[in-house]
Image 1 (cartoon, rainbow, N blue to C red):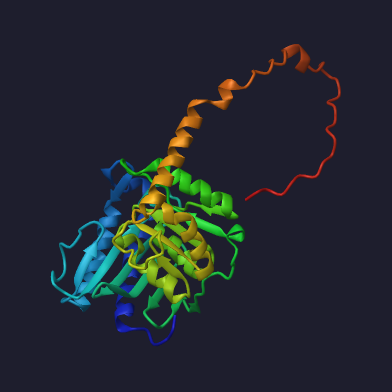
Image 2 (image 1 turned 90 degrees about the vertical axis):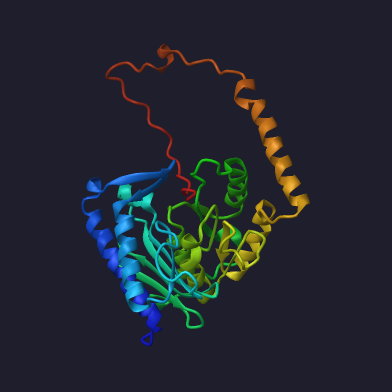
Length: 328
C-alpha cells in the first residue's frame, strides 16, 4: 500500500479489519454460528450482520453525512441524499464461511456520484488487504497490483460463479460456461465474486465472468481491476455494469476475447444474437431427447468366471506406461 493513503481509504481499511476480526473469531467455532435462509441456497449468518454493523459504525463515525448501501440492511443507515455512498458486503462468500471453506472476504467501496473512487477487499483468512484509490493504483498490502500478462485465452485461468438461486437461468449459463471452458486452460468457481475480482487484479486469475451479481458484490473489486490495468464491464463490453447483474473482467486482451464469447448471452445483446442462443438451447434439448446412451448397443457383461484369479496365483503385471499430464 502506498504510504500516502487517501484518508477515506484509511477509514475503509479500519472498518474492513474490524469486520475481519469478528469473522475470524467466529470461524474458530463455525458450528456455533446461527444461520438463516434468505431464499434457497442464499444464507445469512449472525456474523454477516455483526460485521456489517461494525463496518457501518466505523464509517458513519468518521463520515456521518455519507450514504450507505449494504447487503443486509440496504439503505437503512446513513444519509439518504448524499453523493458519497459506501457500498458494503460484510461477508462475501457466506456459504463458504459456514462450511469452513476458506474463500470469503469483506468488500467496501465508496461511490462518488455513482463512480467508484475508493475500494477495499479484505481476505481475513490470509490477512490480505487489497485496496485502491481512483488514479493511484491498486495494492495488496504493500505491493502494487498488475493484471496478468497472458494474451491468449487458451492459456488463461478464468473464474466464474454458478447460478444458485431459484429462477436463475441455468441452461443458458451452462452453454456459456461450456464455450468458455473449451476456449481456456481452466475455469475456477471459488464462491466469492469480490475476491475473484481481487485475484484478477493480482494476476492470479486472467479473467472473470458472472451473472446475477449485486452492486456490493462487484463495486470494490471493479476498482481493483481497473487500477491494476484491467477492464471490467457487462457482457457486451460496456463499462456501466454496476447495476446490470452481469460482469466480465480481465486484462485488456483477455477481456476483449471474453466479450466476444459472452456478448450474445448479454441481456443487452441484439435480437439476432438472442435468437441464436435460443436456437442453440433448443438444439441441445432436441439432442438430449435422443439419448446416445440409450441408442448404443449394450456390451455383454463379463462373467465372474472370466474375472476370477486362482487364489495364490501371481497377479499379472500391467505393461509400464507413461502417465499423461493431468488436464488441470
